Amino acid sequence: MAFESSFVQPAIPRIDGHYDHWSMLMENFLRFKEYWNLVETRIIAAAEGVDPSKAQHKQIDEQKFKDKCKILKKDTAKDIWDSLKQKYQGTARVKRAQLQALRKEFETLHMKAAESVNDYFGRTLIIANKMRIHGECMKDVVIIEKILQSMTPKYDYVVCSIEESNDLDILFIDEL
Image (cartoon, rainbow, N blue to C red; front, side, top):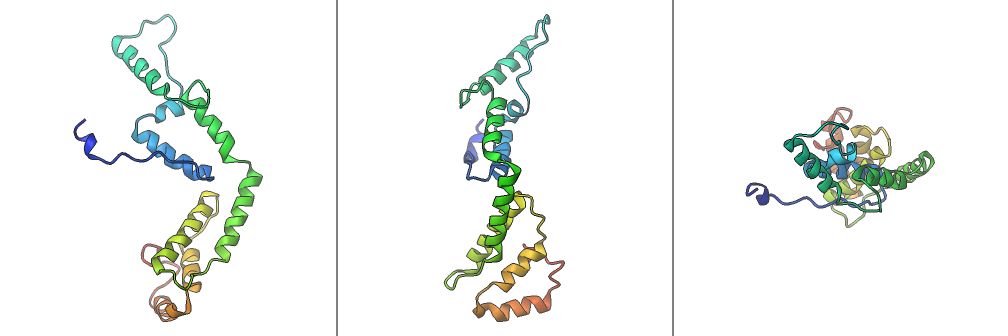
């Protein structure tokens, strides 16, 4: 317990309109807290007619206690998870529309005059990652080329140097 308290507790992820991204973060959070098994499966009670051992009884009670932390007038953590998935994941048509909007945003993306390279790089990666979450198969070379082609003219010499000294097809984003 003393060892655990020295770590910073992770924040509970909030849905930001992108269910797939949120569900990935939330699953990691719940796994860290050792609650994921309650979402993935229901509480496993002892078989009918079989008297559980004290250890099994304690484990079932612990699972029930963890599962009591619930919302949305649902009976179990699994029911809550399924309800959130249904509400926020959206239909294929909605996902396709969201992906189209992200593609347009990516295509029209340009570095702002007063923007730092790190800020622009981060802004580009956020959009690219959202596109990937929505199912877009996006290679690093596409993102790298977008960044290099859409920087302000004051970085033209840097862009030229990068393009001349590197094979962009095998360059990783982290290397850029």
